[in-house]
Image 1 (tube, rainbow, N blue to C red):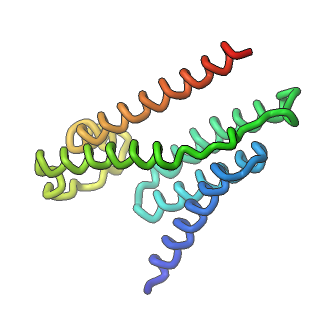
Image 2 (image 1 turned 135 degrees about the horizontal axis):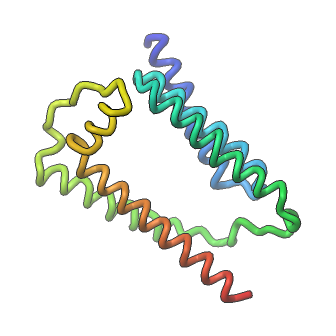
Length: 167
């Protein structure tokens, strides 16, 4: 095992451990700080993959923007002590089915199109090269991720609307 492998496993452990803490903790402030560790772990993995541009964007956008916004939103909320972030029910079965169907769809599309056997493209070193690679070589995966994010956005809006109507 090389030093590179040890550093990778360290970043992977930090990322997975802090991500588990984000979804299992009941304290929203602790979840926000665990999310900070998760973002830094992902940025470290990007650095190991020689994707320096993505690592810097990860730190600037997620840590510098989104996480700070979450922390300020939490700190400025008057009713922070009465916020219930856990519903008490875990929909593990439903989540497992949805993830299984999505992964089955991704794998079947990869097998059907023969995408899994394509040679790996040369890594893009500039923002232009990265954008060109995403739109040309990884267009299918890019679109699938866009659909997944849209589904998550619609689900979050539906949950927020349901809670607003119950008040």
